[in-house]
Amino acid sequence: EAGVAQSPRYKIIEKRQSVAFWCNPISGHATLYWYQQILGQGPKLLIQFQNNGVVDDSQLPKDRFSAERLKGVDSTLKIQPAKLEDSAVYLCASSLVGQTSGNTIYFGEGSWLTVV
Amino acid sequence: AQSVAQPEDQVNVAEGNPLTVKCTYSVSGNPYLFWYVQYPNRGLQFLLKYITGDNLVKGSYGFEAEFNKSQTSFHLKKPSALVSDSALYFCAVRARNYDRGSTLGRLYFGRGTQLTVWP
Image (tube, rainbow over the protein chains, first blue to last red):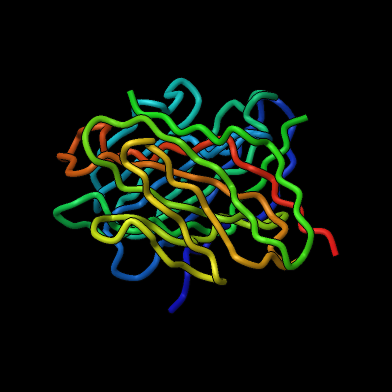
């Protein structure tokens, strides 16, 4: 079974530039997540989709971050303009949707962003 | 408010010795609890989870974890550590039975514990 695919794996940009990350979840997983992991910290949820609808984006800095999942499968996370503090690993994850929240969340390899 | 604490930033053990990585949590109601492992320059890999039933949960690579409701803990254990177990370990908690639109469904992570197993 293919896992969660992410690209690019590594990106270096200058501050105020823009960047986009792409994610393809595990086949059949209706729920997709974007997490931000800053060095030395645990991952923090940025946004959660169920199919193509947003379930939770309360921690997404909406002035510079945006995400979409137009057809309910692939997703794109964009940062524009980037700040130095956005340097982090951006983890995409997916899970089945069900009646409980016990479903395992599976993570991709991450997209490593360095803003200089 | 929901939170996870991993009180040790680092754990060092000798190969062949038992290891424990500690985790305590705070959540409204009964939790779902997870352990993930992260190797250098890699994403998070699922190890095991507690949903219900037996308090001792067995997972991948010989790891197990014990759910202790009274102490609100979910410590990760392995009877005999390997050098290849050296990695960053994350504990995570999720509230049980969330509704669409509720932040209760969010997975909360600890800060991680760096495990080093030396030969």
